[in-house]
Length: 574
Image (cartoon, rainbow, N blue to C red; front, side):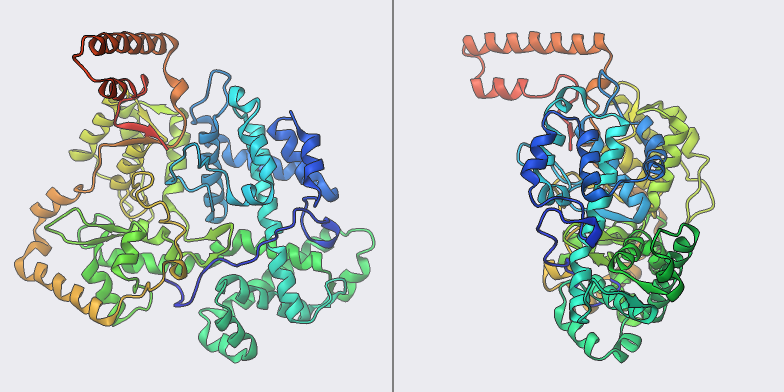
């Protein structure tokens, strides 16, 4: 944890749907029913473009091209339907990874661990709450048949980026109001800096109103009690200087005097805030790196796991970061409790990605430590170039890769090679890149970078359950001492250094159940689909005959025919 404070989401997000860009308040119109009526029967790309065009705001073609370039390699490896497009399940997976890669931003509603069903479609919360009619447009109509092309995907990502940008308006207005600043007036350089500094306190502390009130009344506490406050002030100042540079490079008509006198509008302040949101994780990454280095130093087995006793021992002795309670760690999905010999262990990449280490939490998104596995995975996608990979090719590609915590390639002989073969066998000889089993395999190949993928629904709030939402999330001194004492028993019995035990137990968390993050339904060849469908109908007919003869009950027959003809009963989409 970075701060022992409430990181609960910022309340009161913008509830009104549009407001004018000239006032810096967004792009959706209050009378969105009329806007929606105009969009009926239009495809997603057109709908998103009309949303982004409301109020005179247009996304620059260069910005759309940058998004397209960012997702192109990933898009090329996604399974497609008969028309070469992606289904919704695949598109939301692309969107999640795009925002995590770009800004380490977790958009609420796009978490891969959510179970999608008739009541949960996996649309981003910010889209569902602010433009609910567009969710219907996005998930229905012609997209049920044709799917989504890459331009649809780019339009959706651009619209989500703009929605995130506009969601910050309310908080910025609240901060300005507390400073008794009329947003129609202009601020000098000193006033803008103070406004932005205040915004950072509100943004980072969320709904911890008591702490915010204390800090605003006594700014000396910011320098003495707020981690890295001097660096944060300098970061904000750097964003203002970047704004000045951009204004001087491309001066707008009528803004020459503002540029010369160094005065700023509300829109200028909002533009700085948008840049802060997109780049803050990069600025804060040094904290994540420090925390990872400390955890890696405690990883005595090299398996990307730290015994809970060591985790708490460091928290008690030297560091304020490692103090979450055991129940909270369990709820976050960061505990490996499968080995009776090694005891309870904290999974390093899962812990780094957990909500307790997200530095910013708002109603619509969280900003967390970067997922180092994303860069590794993108390299794999670029090398393979397809959604289904030959296991031999994967072993060759990954066998020549390194990771941030290890300069040597992973050792893929033995268990890892065998597991790769088993994954391929369960999928007709090929490995789906965008599935739980391959992600699990990547975790064991790069245990300190790639999170362990729990089955969907097991820890559905693992990445969004903030400390304040959980409740009593700090472990007591007595609890920490008890775990440290328990860990001492492993040292005294010699299990701590027993290489044979460690080697036998290191994959104790491996699970055989597959889950496909993307929609692979259309990937089977036409003759395979026909054969599978024919076999299914033959089986169904035989079961009906058995029911008629009284050999099998109708309930068992229904269960027997309920599995998909394309995937085994151990596989399902998430």
